[in-house]
Image (cartoon, rainbow, N blue to C red; front, side, top):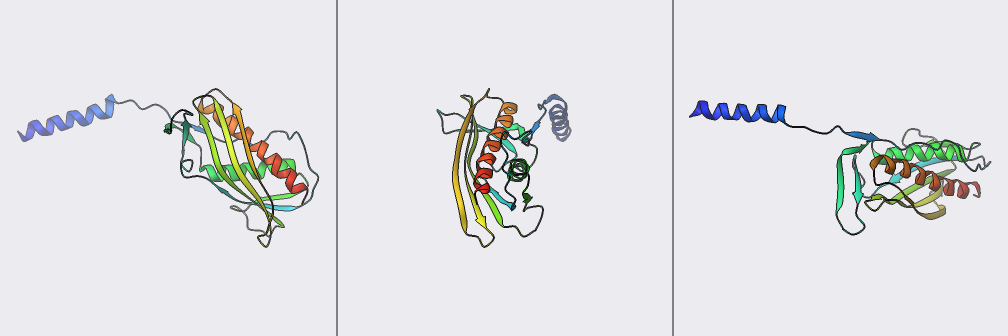
Amino acid sequence: MFKKTVGLCLIMVLTACFGGYSPDSSFYRLTPLSEPNQVFLASKSIAVTKVGLPEYLDRPQMIMLDDNSPKIEIAEFNRWGEDLSNMIQRKMVADLSKYLPKSKIINAAEEVQPTALDVRIEIVRMDMTKQGQAILEARWYIDNNSGKVLDSGKFTQSSDIKPTYADYAAAASNLLSEMSLVIAQALSHI
């Protein structure tokens, strides 16, 4: 009986190792702005200090929502190439540097330097829907070096896309660049 049980277990293990198929994972990144459509000539020192995410987005897997259902679909094989909060923070630094070429923009997670202004971002929503929408909703804040909020705003924008993860990553990059433009404009007036 013991030999039969061991033999059966061995067959099951070998079947699981050789018989199963797992699709390849795809990894995506947020791309920086290629060419700004507007430039502000303000000369300031600015740190992008924080990007907050809701818990449902704070994961490596990409997600898809259905406007007609409360269900969140987690795409196990479609993932962000790195921590989403860090990636957004680096993208914002890159984009703001292009919109404000005379300003010094740093990533506070990578450099510790005193700056005159800090930018904080709280992502409320950064979703793709089965209905073919990429949606970005966020709040942003500009603080002086003593922590006083000098300006703030809410950014809400959507884009029609094919409901694929590659299209979503590209649309999310574009929506974040549009938000960067709004923040750059606010920074140029402070």
